Amino acid sequence: MARATTVSLREKKQKGQKITMLTAYDFPTAQAMDEIGIDMILVGDSLGNVVLGYETTLFVTMEEMIHHTKAVTRGARNTMVVGDMPFLTYHLSVEDALRNAGRFMQEGGAQAVKLEGGRERAAVVKAVVEAGIPVMGHLGLTPQSVHQLGGFRVQGKDVETAKKLIEDARALEEAGCFSIVLECVPSALAERITKEISIPTIGIGAGAGCDGQVLVSHDLLGLFSGHVAKFVRQYAQIGKIMRESFKAYKDDVESGSFPAEEHCYGIKDEVLSKLY
Image (tube, rainbow, N blue to C red):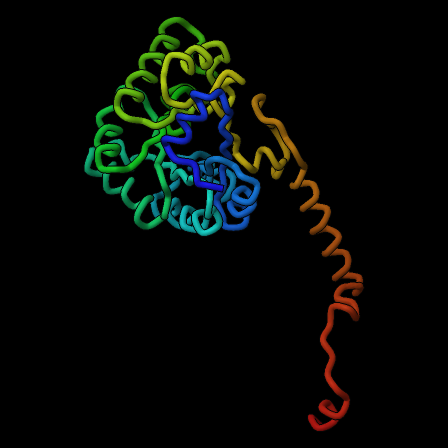
């Protein structure tokens, strides 16, 4: 299967074919997604929450992102990999943005980068795209701005903020983004944005009217217990299976039933006899 490109993704939008995207942070997960034909893998800064145990994504560093992006690109031979630019790696200057976006490509092996923000990021997007680096935008609930937004809440529910989202989407398209993630946006608004721009929209909590969908793989697999966001569909309960398996292993070791004879390597008696 040919790797998705910015051109092929736009063609999918034009043909009404849905785009699939998931997060991955390691080699085996990326390899599994690659084998079944996921269009895009996002090495998300959600890494901070689901892999590194941070309370928010704000603590994630470029070094951590590059480390995990390298692992993902080793497993994703046929899948487009998008590196998520962490907090303050593109906010201070265009030069910072270019340098860090370039690291995702040159060191991480990614095919594109993602950054959050609307019109205020247009100049950065334009500069990065002009440097030959494809950029995916991100509007709506932008986790790196969670404190400014007043928490994790749906965005665009009133006239003013809804208009801003539409204008921001147009600005990102004009700046050269090849697609835009819409997170926690009312479905009807996300569908309108999708129809008004020529580049694909990827929804997460933004309804079926988007051109594609993305989920955090740990949410999809049920790796954590506790609160599950409304927009998540859990396709498995891997976390429960893991805990049950770890408990069974613990019990077997403590009881002496593991390792059993079939798990052990033998040695000839005459060899043993010569050791004494």
